[in-house]
Length: 114
Image (cartoon, rainbow, N blue to C red; front, top):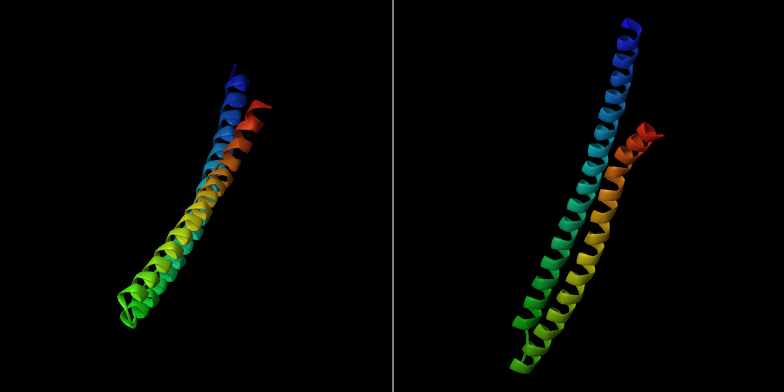
């Protein structure tokens, strides 16, 4: 009876350690992924601000209302396209973060099941 309790306790300790290790690795992967996403968002924001500033400077220097309208239209199309591309890129990044963060947990669970 004592041996069974001791064996059960050791098994529980091993399982707890593996689970904790998996969770810590998952948090580490999530943290790295979110730092990468934050960096990407910062760079995108800088590019968007620079593009908007450049478009504004061009509009100020426009010689006619038609030219100003053309500059604004080109800027709006470029900004829209850049925004859609960034959303797509961020979507892929979030999928990768989720996949990478859950891999250690999935591995730990598969070890327990096997």
